[in-house]
Image (tube, rainbow, N blue to C red):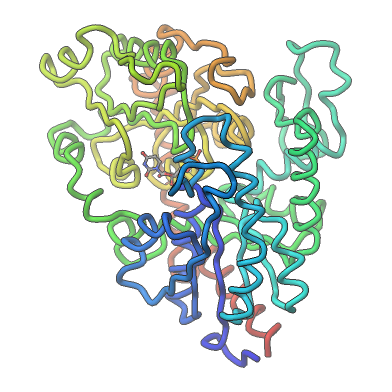
Length: 477
Ligand code: UDP
């Protein structure tokens, strides 16, 4: 039984996707910095992500075998971002459920007294409850999107709308948030298997001890309160986790490969605040035609940019969708752009002084990282909680401009095309001159300062973490 902080042993088990693994490693680091014993559980192929980041820390690593072949996946395919086609995603989900037996075994061997487990592993709650281990849940999202999801599921305001073009106000939440029917993440409209999955997630959530959120109070104070009082769940805001550490950016999730990336020396030669960074996260794929429109829009805007080229859908794989002569024009004549194919050192780019704006798909981590860097954003949501995160950025915080994507569509080939002209307009709004753009930049800078203050000693997230650790220690005395 634990009698003090040092006797707590927390096992972190992130979902196998960059947007879940990276924040959980940072979270484990911040508990470890407070003297808590921490272990990260992941699969063998994901150690290549985890190991370089935890190398100089006391965090322990435990492995759980991933049944890729048994589930019908290619050998070594152990991360959602490496699933070769959307058709294989159900196989990945099946493999994840097959982890339950080895998970049970690992808990019996490691004896953690607390687990912080990804909300997408709802089957773990039966095992931790049986073993008497306290389970906390981590969703990799914020209070605002969770409150919107809760309200929409409870009141179903979109269901009574006559057609897809109509909008509704999200009921019972602190702000006036208007959404189109097509922007709703409607889990009841998915297939039976997915509906059952979401039901299990809800059930596991209720049975867990509480929720740990990667966010900070000042970003969404009304929604922290709403979540606790109206939804009535225990929750702790301990983020932005990417900011925790003495040398914030360098020693968090960046590696030496990140720090030596060529784009950083390219940025060194650019004027302060002049470059737009464009990245759609680790999972998004786009139609080739859409990639072409992005390139055209960026070029027409005449602002400097770094473009992390999204993966094209399978059938376009062998085709380069950049406009003819594009790379030559942007690289040689005027050095307007830098193209990255593959993994970008996002935290380092966002925090480079030359970067003045961020075009993002509004994944929660990217959104928060943009906020921390004090940047205004161009929002381009695609699926999951991203349309709700866009509302937070554009309507509540007023630090962004929407590119105009209005349909929550999973398959990239079914998504409406955003034309180059719309992209150019949004880029000019955020990167251009004028009172409105300047006011938006100022608000973004102020929020960035608040994020940094939140994680400093006596800041809101720092204090919240102290409170959480004390509560967990007391539970296990
Ligand atoms: N990321 C990165 N380089 C890339 C793409 C993504 O470092 O080229 C990181 C990004 O900084 C963020 C995470 O991967 O921490 C993506 O998480 P997010 O929630 O934004 O989106 P997801 O990938 O889950 O859709």
